[in-house]
Each structure stands twice: as structure tokens, then as C-alpha cells.
Image (cartoon, rainbow, N blue to C red; front, side):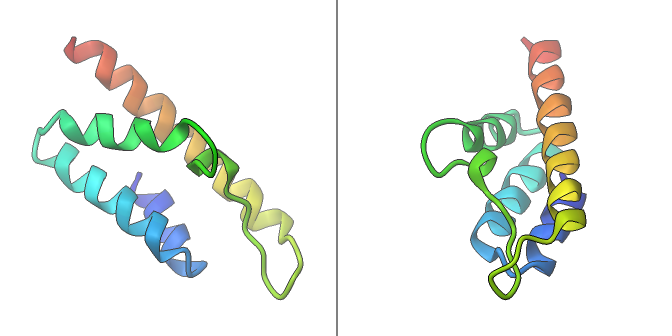
Length: 86
């Protein structure tokens, strides 16, 4: 999650970065609400899943592949952790 947060901040996607940071902070404090916060970012329209990075009107392939990888890994880890604590 921290890698995802860093990439989003680096790309100037500050709103999403702040939301990911808040969820990660809560998870680090052993607050299960952070898992709910994070996983809820993946549903519906204009979700974190829909985010595509662009720079000067172009789609940077490497950065978008990194975003996809980090987003997928973070979701998988959060989802597995949520299942473990149920």
C-alpha cells in the first residue's frame, strides 16, 4: 500500500494518495477499518480500478504497469488480511 501511495503522490494524484495513506495508517495501527476503507476504493464508478495515469496527454506505459501491479498486490494483501481476521 505504501508503494501505491508513493506512486500516486509522485504522479500528482494527491486525493487518491491521501486516501490510500489514511487507510494504510489505520491498518498499521491494527485498525481493521483501514481494510474496509482501502477495499471500498475498488468498487463503483471512478474507483481506484478506473485510474489511469497520464502525462502531457500521453499514457506512460511503464508507470501504468507499475500502478496496475501495486494496486493488484495491495488489494490482494488487504483482501487476504480481511479474511484472516474474520
